[in-house]
Image: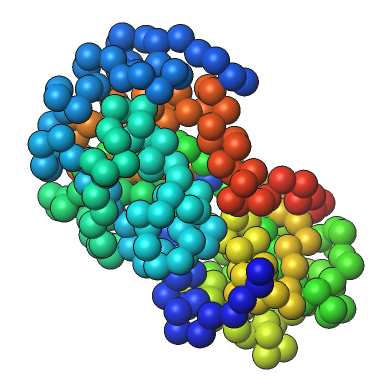
Length: 287
């Protein structure tokens, strides 16, 4: 069911983006296997967590498709479901997972964390990796192009068809350099403080299109702005951006959380969760 949310809720949500085969064998050096059974090194009794026998997970303003509703504990939404899958890999039951509400700044700041790891769409960058630990990446992410479904660009299938358009982008995030590389001077790039403001500008005909993380774009077009559509992804520039869990720098948990993520990649769980919640399968690459 499509639904609209108040603009302030959407802006807070979209501003939070920083800004991605079955079977397997257990490896005692990494801490977990693809079966969901923890090995000794990563059993709850052996892990150093904030609270004994409890896994504390940090997140900020919950929004789709990462979380459904305002309660991250439901297991609904990509990151909520993934957290519980990681917890299972590490040997924690659902009632042994607690959630801590934090700001995005707290997640990436060089300070002691009030969580064991954070799940909030945090892009892995060299600069951030100097002050926090990242798990193995659980998602690659591209930049998607959103237009008004009934507008002049609703049927566009190439980048060239956007020539002359005004395209909203988020200043200071990866959407800006990727959009610049895609079009050069062929479009007018209009910077916004966050993607929510850019989407509002598009509905008011102030811009013709918006570039943002494609997972975020699908949710924006299907949940928050149902008159819009994601028509494709922009070409990559350099290495593909990746998202990972955030931990304290040099955390004793990093290897085990990474091993759990690796196992969930290997057994197909992450791919299944992506198909279920992110719904980016089949979005074409624009050229």
